Image 1 (cartoon, rainbow, N blue to C red):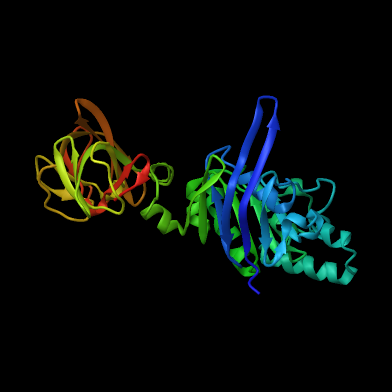
Image 2: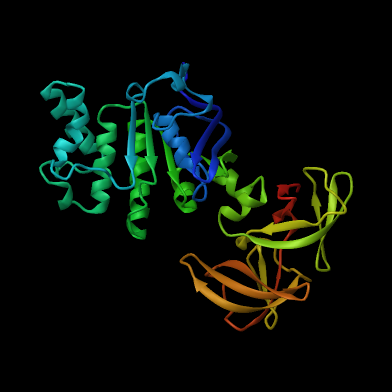
Length: 375
C-alpha cells in the first residue's frame, strides 16, 4: 500500500466578529510517499491552516484527509504519528538538548537504553552529536532548528510537518539550513510538508510544490514546471521575476498575432482566445535580449542578431553574482515602463545611462487572457 497523503475537497471555515472566513475552499491534492512537498503562497492564503488540519490541530468542516487508506478526519491528533517543527523551535529552555529530544520517547514510555540510542542516532543525523548536554540558550539559531528537527524525527513519525521553520534565521543561515533540512529529510525518508511564503526557499528545497491563494491550490508541480509553465498570471508574477506587457491579440485557429505597442509576435495557442479582449504577455528577464545601440552587440535571451524591439535606456545596473540585472526604461503606449534584463556577467558590457534596444523571441512569451494562460 502506498502511504501517500491525499486531500479530498477539504473545506475549513472560521467564524470571526466580521463574519465567516473561508480559509480552505475544496482543496484537493496528493503528497507522494517520501517526498518533500511545499505549500507556498502569500500570507493568509490557507497554507498554515491546511498544515494544521493535517495535524488535527484544526477540525475541517467538509471533505476528507487520507493517509494511505486511513481517514485522518476520524483519527485523533495524538494517533496520527506526526512530527511538527514550528518557526519558533518551541524547545524547553529548562531541559538539556538530550532531554528535549528524548521527551517524546519518554512520553511513549520507551526503555532508557532505547531512548539513549535513538537520541544519539538522530543527533548524529542532524549533525550535532556533541551538544547533548547543552541548554537551548547555548545554541545558535541554526543549531536550535536542527534540535527541533531531531525532536520531531526521533520517534519515527510517518509524516513531518514544518511551519515556516526558517522564518527567524538570517539570510545566509537560511540558505545553509534549507540544504540541511533537505539532506536530513531525504536521509530519514519521511514524507514531509513544508510551509513557507518564501518562493526561493520553496523552489530550492522541494520535490514538488503547491501554489495557494485565497484558500485554493492554483497549481502543483516541480519547481521547474511551476517556473517555466505557470498556469495563471498570478503564479507567473508570484514565482521569480517576470516582465509583463499589455497587448492586443488577433487569434486564428491554432495561433495568434500578439501586438505589443506596434511590435508583432506570432504565438501558438493552447486555448481559445477572445479577439475583443486584451492580453498580458509575460517574459522572464533571462529571456530578454539587450542590444547596445552604439556597438550593436546583442547579449542575453538566447537568439542573437535581433532587429526591431523596443528602444530604451539603462536606468540601474545590479551585480547579482553570476549575472548582471539591468533595469531598462522603455516607453509603451506613451508611458514609461521598467523592464528587467538578466545577462551573464561575462557578456555584460553595457553601462548605466546607455541607450539600448530590447527584444525577445515568441517562444519565450507566455500569454494570459483574463488571468489564465492561453499561449
